Amino acid sequence: MTRRERNLGIELLRIICMLTMVIQHILGHGWVIAMINPESWKFEFAVALRSACLFGISGFALISGYVGVNSRFRYSSVVLQWTKVWLYSVVFMALDCVIRQTPFSIWEWKGMLLPTLHKLYWYFTAYVGCSMVAPLLRRAIRQLNFKQATVCCMTLVCVFSVLTNVVEGDAFYTNEGKGVMWLVVLYILGAYLGWFRPHEKIPMAALWALAVCSVLLLAGLQPVARRLGLAYFAGDPRNSSPHTLLAAVSMLMLFSRVQITRFKKPIAILGGASFSVYLLHEHPKIRLYTISKYSYLLAELNIPMMLAGTILAAMVIYVACTLVDLVRERIYRALRIRQRLDALETRLIGDLWAD
Image (cartoon, rainbow, N blue to C red; front, side):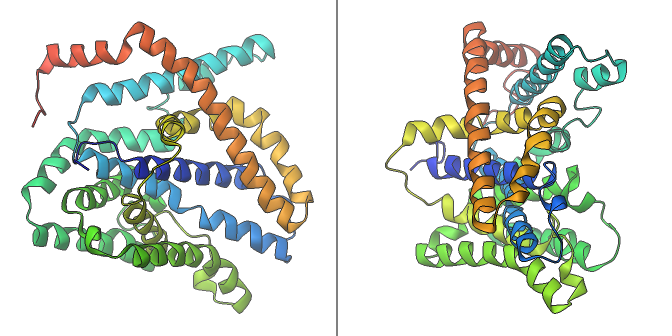
């Protein structure tokens, strides 16, 4: 496989990461965990599922660096993503005003028209900030030798993951893994793995074991710690915590080497729509009338049905959002949006970041 060839294992990981994000939102924004008795085993299983899914956010950002270090950086790609944010924000806000006749709010419309500046989607806001330094990070990684890059990455992990989660307070302003600084760290780590590929020397059996064990650790640490009275580990894990990062990195190393021989087209389609799934299901109006309105019913089911129902609901949401995005993609192709943005960038700054 050449470095520029599309890696379907990575696309499959995109799907998994986005599914985990949807599951987290169902359990959180849908009030599922809040409706369960915190002293019950059902609560522990719900918390374990949410914790196991926490690697998805960091995994999604790691993929950006892993793919980006071997790809030409384009400002037009960032603008293209921004148009999707703007389109979905405005369209569904307008539909809500027309269909449900909700009162017109200048503050809501201001947020919808300028979603990035008003942090409508925290991940996209952080993604834009990270993208502004991505070409510098990409060039830096490619210029370093393996030893230099390894030491830099180890230092970043120690400072922004280990120390940040040991010392009280957010000394290095990672915002518990929900800010630009943490996404920059993840981009660098992903770029390091994508350029030097140290994991290619590790046996696949070892990668499978590492990935499974790290996710199980992420899932079980909080419930077990609470039952044992270990207050330090009983709190909610953060996106920047070492065990969350370990799970995300191990999943990236594993799936980057997974060979996909079947279902290539569905994986490519679903993987390509992953970012739009985030934009659609997390739109405030869509979330208000779907996840936040009905997900709490899952809390009334027994443990197996609750867990299965949550995962199934996430899959249905993913497919539904993908179908909507396919319509948007057809419109963009008909209007040649991507080509026009690429041409505009070339006209303004030329082939600035071409290799």
